[in-house]
Image 1 (cartoon, rainbow, N blue to C red):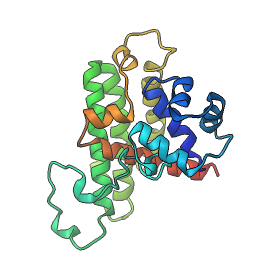
Image 2: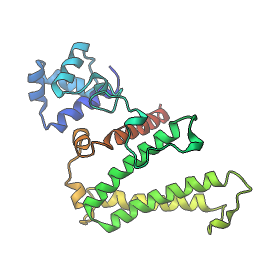
Image 3: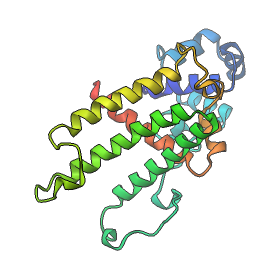
Image 4: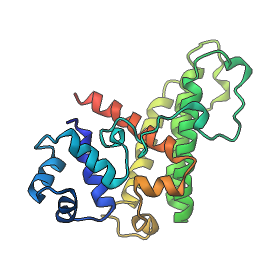
Length: 230
């Protein structure tokens, strides 16, 4: 069985707030065997995968990490919502990958800023916003500066130092919002976030239009991270 299966069956059980004892009894196996499946110690049969999929009402592709969608659906370009679905004239007939990634990122950011809005904490919103703005600024200026004929007069920060400064300030803002939302923080800056429950099921229900983008972004990002660690 692949590496995703143990993590996902554990996640589904915890999302439902079921005990191992209860799930094991419902699936007709011992609690010890279920524990081994969740830890990835034992391999399970295909029949067990099907039984678990039916039990949690998800697809086998979702259980195996092949799709971030509980239904096992594959994300298509036309399925992703966007304020303006019109493809620019200069991009027609070219690869749709940049446009697809744009929609995925924009929809994921919509969820993030909705979470921040519900939190109603100006400092936390400011720190997250500054981090993201610096990231966009760095990427834009890097692409802009690839052509040496593009004048740097539109920027006030020297070309030789902007990347290092961006990295340092992004690290600063990341540290601030990570600490503010951690269990070690003794402030009330992110109290509502700490008490707000999220799961793949809740995200799909609350953000029916954008959740597919976020779940696909998570899957893509973690595939890159895991590749780096192989």
